[in-house]
Every structure is written in structure tokens, then in C-alpha cells.
Length: 411
Image 1 (cartoon, rainbow, N blue to C red):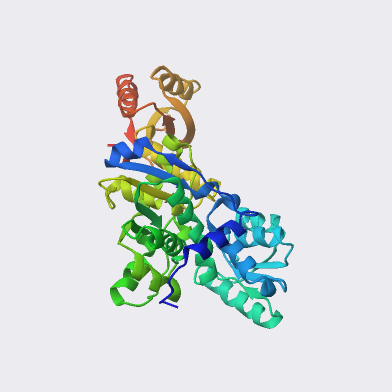
Image 2: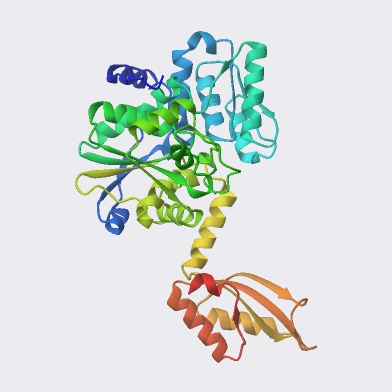
């Protein structure tokens, strides 16, 4: 299978055949990122695909290509995007579908899969456990097992992203793609390299689960340790046998980004492009923003936003952290009189200094206090770093002994 030579006619036929389920996603210019990295950059918004990720392309192609097998029912193991995509594609073709998900999977993801009509079974503590259980059920019930990435039909379906990029961006020179198991980047490379071999394909992994880097160094798929990254959509401990061979053949470069860069990219996309992405969907933007990958010197660089299924709590935490790091939030401790009016006076001073109070907590244990004092911890929103400094200065001028609790993040 490593000698597979893609045929554009076949890839286009598969792409066209999936149009009843898959939609063409838009390409957006992104001036803020272009100015930051010094090249012409556009975004391929797969986060706006139905089910919120590119995965629907591969699952739809698989069910259409192996229609006889799928008719008996389909099954897979997944913690999120692949499961949602398979459930959606199966419902569109009125097929029985079972998705094994980790017992600790977020309730929101379980509900999203169930909403598409699939039977959800909790199995084990990891996606690997779920895949094993799914394979066992497929063998027992003669169902079609649909692998998340290591399947040629899946790769051919993901090639639709590359076909659309080639049509939407005639001067494409470089495509930067998130890498987990390798299905997406293999499909994009198959489509683009078949027609435009000079176009560079660059992969980006999260440093907390860089299995492809280790595999390329060894010359074969390697398994890395437990993932530690907010980019859970690409936290794959081992690339596929098929996809590794394709990536080894077609990738022009590979980069890594850490979680700080990924979180910053997620916020950057929300604030400047008005696009919400999950961690995996933002890694290519993070690579450009940090300089881990450079844009093409001539022509257009396409950044693939692979998915937007981010948990609301994760997104809120990322945004709050970014605001603190940018100086727009400050958490501080001070002491006030433990008498009526003490807290009101403090809050009045915060308001007078232009701060927006977000949270206040009395602290009486673990700190040195006079018998007539109480400790207070405040979280205050400011407009800028300068506004934060001005607020703290005015608080101190008013007689409050202010101790910044997040000072290392805001300097």
C-alpha cells in the first residue's frame, strides 16, 4: 500500500460523491496573521464543516465505498470528532451505528454523538481501549469497523480538503496541516502533490504528543507515552502504518508547538478572525505565529483549521488565561478593616480606578492578619497593561497594601 499512486479522477469522483453529506468549506484571508509572519496567509475553515471537523469527509467516503459492508452496521472507537462524523454519516444513509467512547469522555461529546442517532457505549479509560472493543464487536456481529485514519478510503475522503484548496487558492505555495494519526495530511498531500508537486506540505504536531517526530527518527511508526496537551484531537500516540508511509513520502517539513502557543492561537483566532477552534484546529496558526513554520516566500500559504469542537469550559479557561497574560486581568490580595464599610470602601476604590470587578473572596486562613482585619482576594478586569498598572498604583496611593498574585504572567 505504500506504493499507492493517487489518481486525481478517482479523488474527484469520491469528493463529488460525498456532496450529499459534506459541504465545501470556505477560505478566509487573515491579514492579522499575514502581517505578523510576513507572508500572504489564508485559512481553510474545516471547523465550519458539518459536525465541526474534517472527519466527515473520510467517514462519508468510507461508507459510500464499502456500502455492502456498511449495510450490516458500522462501529468505531472515538473520543470526539471521528465518532460524531461517523454517526452523522451513518444517519444520513440510515445505517446502524455504534460508537465506543472512553468512560471519562466529556458529557457534551457523548451527547453530541448520541444526538446523531448512534448507540454510545462507554468502554475503558482511553480511545485505544475503545478501538479494541469496537474491533471485537465488528468481528462478533460482522459489522464494518471504520478506523479514524489508517484506512485508504478514509485518506481518499480527506483528500477533498486538498482538492478544494487547489481550486480556491490558485497560487497556493505551502499548506500547513495539523497532524495526529496522519489521515488528513495524507489526503491533502495526495490531492495537491498529484497536480502540483511543487506545493509544500508542512505538518504540525503538539509537543505534548509528537509521535510522528519520533517515528520519522526511527524510520517506522513509534508509540510515545501518554499525551499531555490541550490539542486532544491530534493526541495520537502512534501514527498509522499506512499514513506513516504516506507522510514519510510526501511531507516537506514537520514542526511542533507547545500548549502555550496553541492556547494563544485559539484566542488570536477568536479575537481577530472570529473563528472558534479546538486546540488541534489551532496548531497550524500557532506554528506561524511563533515562527516554528515560515510562510511561503512567494504565493499563498494555506493554514488548515481542522476542527472547532472545543469544550466550553476549556475555551473559557483559555480565554481567561490569555486575558491575564495580556494584562487585562489582575488577581491581587489586600487587607481591609473587618468592620462595616471596609469592603464597600475597597470596591469603591476599584471602581474609581476604572477596574471591573469579576470576583471577590474573603481570606481569613493562612495569612497574617490583625484581629480587626480581614484578607480579600480580588479578580479585576482592566482594559490594558497600562490600565492595570494605573489601577494598582491608585490602590496603593489610597493606602491599600496590594500584592499581585499573578504578577509573573503580566509583566
